Image (cartoon, rainbow, N blue to C red; front, side):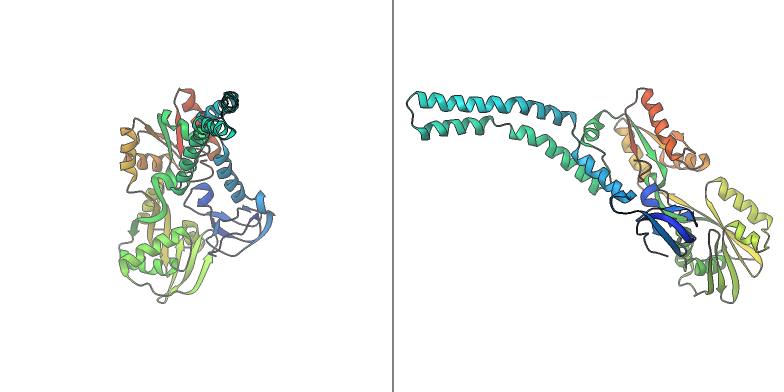
Length: 376
């Protein structure tokens, strides 16, 4: 746990949660088990895995990403192609003029030194080096600067056509939102305090590297201070964690973890769980000593700068559209918070292309903003 997977492969032993945000842009780790495929450079956030390598070297997904950036640098925009065509015609003409100048000076009795000086002067003055170099240099600097800022420009021609864009499609996770899970809501039973639930649950979650667990642990530390050290800590793959904290047998995880232990949810907590899930939050149930004590709602928070960025996009004459695979309730809540009117939700990664094509068929010039390979 905590290590990056070395290369693309197939899981042959173990189960875990894998953080594939580098590839997908999704902040919630993907549960993998025997037979599932994993990608090199993704992070093992949970249990122990034994992976059989299936692709290495230049065949890996990471290598293909690097090749994509390299190809982007090698592409040519229309302005650059025009400069190349002009240079192809202009260079022979300049050479012919230089030779003509050399012959003219020699024919009029000037010495070789003066004649060659005049010919070289023609070459220097008329050489189209600036014409051939200025455009590709400017485009390369633009794509390189974009890469430094975390923006993958897929080719110089893309950079050149951005001036005609009138619609900008935004992915949600990691683009409009932070891409990091945070504790949004806390519900407890009447006999339990919020601080108590956070302290006991946070102690267990602090021992896990799962992003949802870390969100709970961070909130618990901020609220209650230093957390106790758990005993007999156990990670239940795909469900949650359990252990002993301050003498209490504590379970923290999905509702199924508590249900499998034979612990029922009180009506108030069941309602809170349903509300969290209806708003797109991941529900985490906390129980100890045979009773359910609380429910956490964990979600990906909206970036502080997102609303201002959307306002600036509108000021530039661009129409922002939110495109996401998340459920509609979550997508619309995020859109309202940042000021986006048009939302396409519950869209699979492979279907995002079709949404873009429909917008283009309406006569729009569309730009897509995302932070995952699936968005690219």
